[in-house]
Length: 128
Image 1 (cartoon, rainbow, N blue to C red):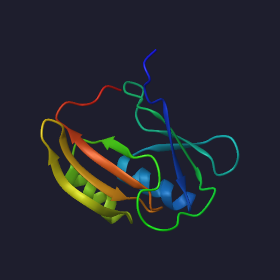
Image 2 (cartoon, one colour; image 1 turned 30 degrees about the vertical axis):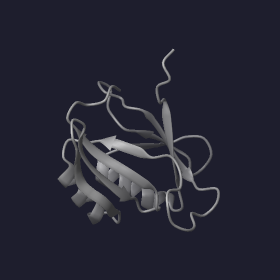
Image 3 (cartoon, helix red, strand yellow; image 1 turned 90 degrees about the horizontal axis):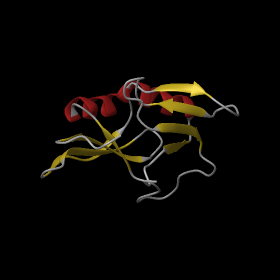
């Protein structure tokens, strides 16, 4: 059995603010599931469902600076459009765009909750 990523979780301080950010920037859909304030994230559609995502309140506040957890990179068609959407919806660009030869064009950003994320237009899309 391959060791493919099956799920990811985004821990946030403000669920409504984070949900609005990811809906506006990536068009993700959120489904209430389990306890209050816990959501399933639908990143794709029936033809290309993507990876199961989860979002819920952070157990402890994010403090200090520097890398704080798993690094996620989201495959996108238009890095410049995503960059503009990140900035328009309260995120902060921390890198790029930069080109990684034979891989693609990348930006890194902090979402509204201080989570470090990436968005990349891949030359050859990764397997999903």
